[in-house]
Amino acid sequence: MALMISVSGIRGVFGTDLTPENLARFTAAYGTWIDRGTVVVGRDTRVTGQICEDIVVSTLQSVGCDVVKVGVVPTPTVAMSVLEQDADGAIILSASHNPAEWNALKLLNEKSEFLDSEQGQAVIYISEKHEFNYQQYNAIGSVFTDKHAIDKHIERILELPYIDSDKISQAGFSVAIDPVNGTGGIALPPLLEALGVQTIHKINEAPTGIFAHNPEPLPEHMQDICALVRNKSCDLGIVTDPDADRLALVTNTGELFGEENTQAAAFDFILNQRKGNVATNLSSSRVADDIAKKYGQTCYRSSVGEINVVKKMQEVDAVIGGEGNGGVINPDLHYGRDALVGVAMVLQMLAERDITLAEYHASLPNYHISKKKLQLDGIDGDQVLENAKKLYADHDLITIDGVKIHFDEGWVHLRKSNTEPIIRVYSEAATHKLADELGERVKNEVLK
Image (cartoon, rainbow, N blue to C red; front, side, top):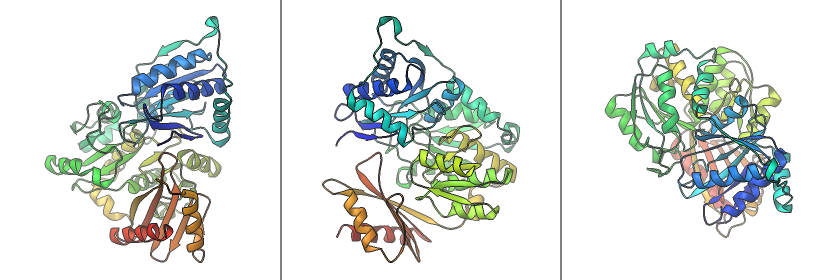
């Protein structure tokens, strides 16, 4: 496994690929690019987080950057802190949904957005050339600790004009949470309490970084919270990944709501408040288009990746956006995926419409997405994508991000991951079985 380098940062297995040396090198490059500005630093609960934070903070100081440490907080809280502190950028230490042995540097700019291609390439260039702006003893940066970043994040959510904590409180919701030993365990309880939720049942809430199950919020990893929702007769279940930028839900019947439908619910809620365009990525479900059409609006598509969706949102002046992995992007708060504001919007919608999550789920179009991975051990990923283009040349293809193939019964999207040595194979059809079969068929055919 090699260190994964992209415009948004670096990612790898700590001690093998991600080492103190390359952590310091990329941090020094980023700090040099920031040019002695103020940088927010936050991290998730991973065991290696403190070591990585110490290296990052000291290195930023060494290139003359002032540092605001916000500690163990969700990724969206770090993004909010950039705006709160009027900072020049941020470094988030989190490998998102990757297993516990991984860690990463995620890089934000002064707008609290992930670096775009041009910005990221500039940082990579500095790191490769070792052109670091190290300072002498009398010009090193300072360090300030902000212990209230999560509180401020929650306050901003409560200040949104369409979030009414009194209305949510009156609904008397009972909620179960599974933050998989990540930052959601720190942020979700105070958020829910501030929203007026009185009954909270928790599993895997201790922020240890030793994940009780695979931290990616996929159906096969969510059976325990489904059982908890049923056993405690909860109104819904909430699952976040380790850095709490992705949101998955469980209905009051203990059934999976679906990550794609998290985005759909957010779109539905906001479009019911005011009309406007919406945006998502190529791998997201057609349900996003259906919700937009319901309100007479347009759903625009971008390449996969948070910054790509954000750029499309800004291009079309979207009122809401996101990704089908449960990533809700509400520009009224900040341009980044945010599970916390997603929770608030879903609770508000259920309270206002006086319906259960199961009832709302039943009202949505019946699409099913299958998510598979094609491991690239010894396989040329680019060649696999070229094979797909040739094999399905007579189909409707979109090739701006991998290869998306439209079939009569659904679609399949193949693209190289930016975070793992795999090709992601997403497929959608009218049933789980058909979506699985469609994805598996394409996966096998492109390897022949």
